[in-house]
Image 1 (cartoon, rainbow, N blue to C red):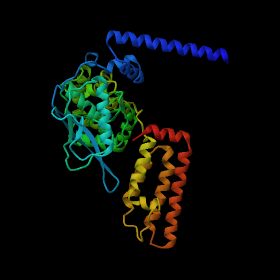
Image 2: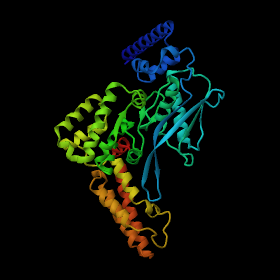
Image 3: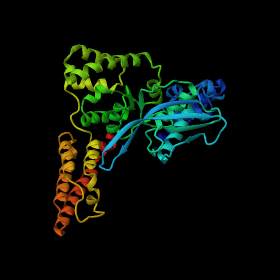
Image 4: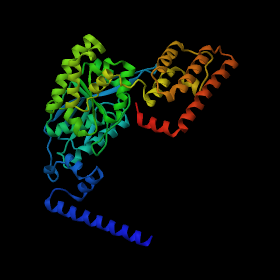
Length: 421
């Protein structure tokens, strides 16, 4: 044990010496400081860090290339019946160089999550440009009357701030959604089942989503129909660099050509629907698109649909969300916070939504859907009597017992955490 500890201590000392030597060489060469070197290690290694930083601006001020720009983000709103509706929102940024504090400010009324997301976005940008020209970035949303909250605007804010500094023209026919971290990683968000149809309704050509939400894009197809895949081109990204490349107007050659090819297929799908997938020319072109843009989720889904290998069941996260959204009007009954004398809402819509969900839900959620169905039926047959109230409570307890079993299953919990929605 003593020899082993001494060996470990020697190895640790050797690693520390190597660290100091490399740091000293970098400082002599003028390529980094101790802080930026440490940031490089924390953000995934020197090679990845070198793709983020701009060595020319580590020791001098970076001026704004533009004082105004805008980008499209994706927002979602919940209605009183529990349904979600999404839309693309224009996010506008202007720079006031006469105002130095705060460095970033929202003009609209926003929630705390949006403020945090914007601050993280600015931290991410400062990893590339530590010394930014003094000024205040004012951010506003085109909808001036609805308060906005959530962290899904983080990636859009980061791309927007970078575009101001790098004088980049952004593609306003595309929208981006995703949380951002200070090390330029794009993280998962929720509400895609509403956001993507909202982007289609706004006649956008493409949307950028986090790669960790890729499974949820299949959920979108199951909930809204396979036509979603050809109505809009969906790209997944892992990093801010990838999001920037897709959102700029002057896109990389391969991406631009993939989007052009996809646009030639859309009229064919609009005319023939799924039958277009029996055309060898269409399949050949989809394979070409997938080769040019490996992160094109629309092309991937259509190719899987042609082979019959597309997912036929929702993720567990989407299944649970849709199940509880279906009984939105009966939440107070379920959690027994109140029991009004007569059920004020019809049960037909809830039962219809649960019945449709039963055919596409994850297998792990089927007992929950059955229990929720019996619970809603109990609410619908309650005549205000004590026996009726007791029946509702019994059915609510059944739902809670099933939830407890699901939450005690480690595999189910893991799938819930990683499926998102």
